[in-house]
Length: 412
Image (cartoon, rainbow, N blue to C red; front, side, top):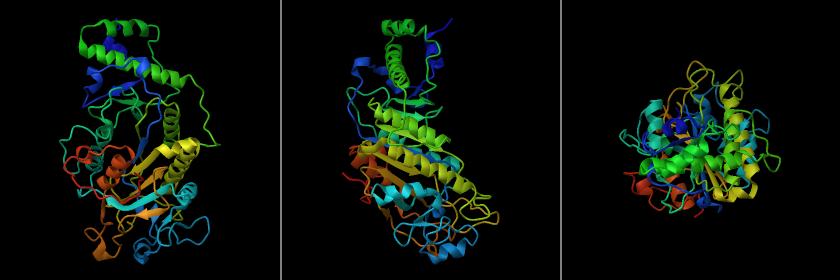
C-alpha cells in the first residue's frame, strides 16, 4: 500500500529543514496564499574544488605573478584572444570570461579579490562546510548561512528558497523551508492519480506534523507544476550553454520570472581542483579554460535573459579556498588560501575590483606559498544579506562575527 510518507518520498520534489527533519512541519500554506509580488533575489554559486582565482581575475600588473607561474600565467593584455582582458590596468579577466566584460563595463559586475576564510584548513570538505555554514572553524553548526539570511514572514512562498540539484546543500539547511529541484521540465508527481486522495488525507489528519507537512508539500508541488506547464523561452536572445551550470541558471531565471516568491537560490559547479593539467599547451587552454567558458557563458546568459529583472537580483560566486601562488611540476596548482569572489546584478556597484591586494612577493604570501586573505568571505556575504536582502541581523546570519567590514560593492 502507498502510505503518506511513501507518497511524499516518491514525489519528484525534495523538501528539507534542519538536518533531516523539515521545519515547515508546523506551518502550512494554501494555494491562494502564495505571494506573487516581485522580491529581491540572491543567487549563490559555489565553485567546488578550490578555483584558481589568480588565473581568473589575473594580477597582470604584478611581476611576481609571472615569476611564480612561468607556464601557467595568463599573458598580459595585448588585445589578442589569448591574453588577459584588462579591467583596470592591474587586474584582468581570463579570456574565457570575455562574455562577462560587457557586464563589468556596464557597472554590474565586480570582483572582490584576496577573499577567504580565517580558518587555515586545506581540506575541501572542511572548508566547504565552513563556508556554507558561515562559521569557519566550527563544525557543530547545524544550519547554513543562506537559510539564516531569510527573514520571518507571515505568508511565505513554499519555494522562497531553492537549490537546483538533487540534494539540498549545507548552505540552505535550517529552520526556514527550502526546496531542492533537479529540473523543472522533468518535475512531476509520480503518483499523480493518488495525489488528490493523499492531499485530503493530510488535511484531515489530527496530527499537526503530518497536516503541516502535507499541505506545505502539496503547495510546493502545485507551484512547480504550474511553472512546468508553461513553455519557457529565454528572453532577449539569451543562449544558455548546455553544461550543468548553464541549464541550472536557466531554471533559476525561470523561477524568478514566474513571480512565485523566490528569495534565495543556490547552485554549484564542481571540477575546480586542478593539481594536474590546469592549462594545456597554452595557458589559456585546458581544464580551467573549459570550465571558465561554461561559467562565463552561463552568467552572461542569465544576465541577458532577466533583462530589467536583474535590477532586483544579485549573484555571488564563491569557492572554498584558492590555489598556491606558485605552479607545481604537473602544470597545475595545489591547495592554497585566498581566492576571488564575483558579484553581479543591478544592486552591484561594479566596474571595479574590490579588496586590499596583499601582493605576491615571498614575504607577502601566506606561509610563503599562498595569496593572503585580506577580506573575510563573511564580509562579502554580510553586505549582500544586509544591503540587498534587507536583513539587518548579520550577527545572526554569521554567528560569532559581530562587525563585518563592508567594501561598498552593494547599493543599500
